Picture 1: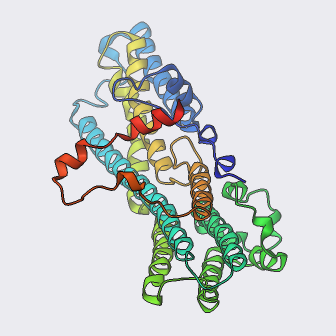
Picture 2: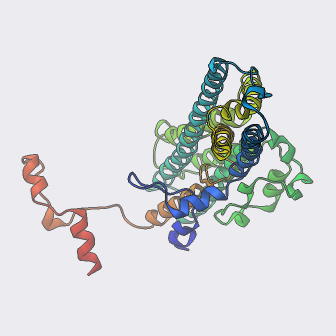
Length: 383
């Protein structure tokens, strides 16, 4: 089956789209309204705003200014300013830490699929000119791309599961509705792998390590069967890329298994709670209008709690949210690339047209000016 049948950009996860010119678009606003943290922040901020506006309304309409019941409770804004500074400082630190983890996670998963593709491409390229039969080479390629696709999907599943991944190791747990969504990713004809090995995989708690070992065993067996036309030191490059992918996987596990330090989180939540109670009292002193007291109190708390929710979501970049790495897209992308290299192997290596051979010792600028741009070639072929 052609590689294009396994990949389509329309299946990519719907995430927030923006350009350098416009970020606030109707689709992005609609996407924001679909995020749970928006409603959590709303539920926390609205009561604070109601208290702030209600206090101002009651004090202004039912109390003499000289007998204000809150008079003297907070005589200076310095306490509130200091508390606000601490809250904003810790919230910014929390958000920066989550932002760093998010981009580290993105770096790791893109490195993983890059390493896996590089390893698979090396292995299939080394089959050219091998002493083994064409049937043995084809069997090797058919198996290796299935294992690489399966390995990548299992890596994503364990990153998604985080510290709970050991709970998904038994056959009973494989029927659990709480399985990682990555188990539903597209694979390259995994049914082609022997049933006995798939049964072993299902019951194994360390699925990534098991498939990783299988791939290495298949490579070693292939070397003994003379499936490669290169010496062992060159073949080791493919093994090295494969090992690097697994190293990146183990490094990415730190993101899902090591939480934000508990003392920092407790300090931030205690300060946020204290700030929530004090804000209505302070805000009603800043204005004579009850609705402005509501807006000031609501806006302050909504911003802080929404940023905290955003940080908690960025902390888990593998959880299939609108603010996470689109791993389903990356799985399909790797499948597409793996099928591309198997298709490429069926054709001869690229060569020059005889009439177009040129003296490469000529000036580089002359050579560059004598050829066609890629766009010109594509345009000619499409006509």
